[in-house]
Image (cartoon, rainbow, N blue to C red; front, side):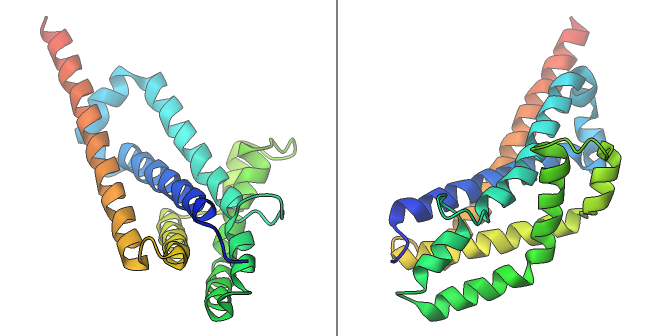
Length: 197
């Protein structure tokens, strides 16, 4: 059974959510932006701590949700399996990409299972992160992989081509970063005005 439009759109929406969570998290956490954002972060430390934590939670939960193997849920493996009957070549191609990225997916699952969705009593948070051993570059690689798979699935329905969907993810990411810069810029200016008053 061919994946339906609403199922594919659900995956695309989750990838949009993952994209914005990662890019905003990276934007506010990047040490290279401390001069630009330092005043805002120092002025509202609990807000930014909560935002960064929530974004990291999303970054580690969404990959598991996207690749959940439970047949009752909407997930990439389910849609790829459903695609077998109508386009076995494409189903096989996506399955191969998933296999190539299983190591990265497992790292997110380690964090999800030991820290974010469940707290492993035998691991400190530091140990859970060390066990997952995810490097920032790997997060970017995983995001590109997930966007590629979602864009490929989007092309199956025929509403959007893979190329258009990849471009949409790119534009969405740029806008998420720009809006983050604008919001933090407003906070910095607000802090500057309140100090001058």
